[in-house]
Image (cartoon, rainbow, N blue to C red; front, side, top):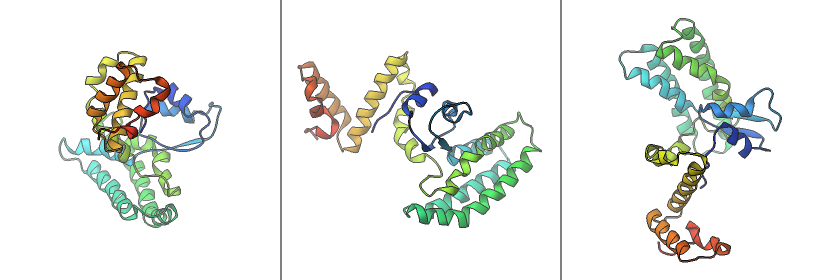
Length: 229
């Protein structure tokens, strides 16, 4: 598993030559990939319903919020349908979505327009609804392709330990430090995928490097080659 430190301009560089659908959250740096004046392969951004739902959930925690609560219920219903379709091939998932989810999303668009016209734009609810409206085309993209996920929760679960460590990672200080941090994170998560204790692996690997392990034999130091597990 590989992590990369990248701001918006780096995302464009990394994805140079890529065309197709990219599953993302609401990070503004991805907007460069769909800018009208961008020259390059066609990219479509599929946005995350979990992020849209989270905006509304935050409002419900601060007291009675009927509109936000209804929005959460609508999105949760889409999630329940996805849970039932999970594991099916893309064609079957697409058929299930078109039959069951498309009417719900169409109705939610009407609901969204209705309440945006009546809620103060600068209120927390107004901003949450504006967020959903801003990414609407990308949010409903999952209805057209069975390969697209409704959210990127699987990625978020993987990077949660790193996200929880973000304050400790502030030592990066500059781009080079952040790139090194991404390399270490990649080694740690790849170790986990290979059932290797990350701490033992890093100790063994750093010790080997200090003792003069040849760079030409770096493949022997990769997590899946570690023999101490």
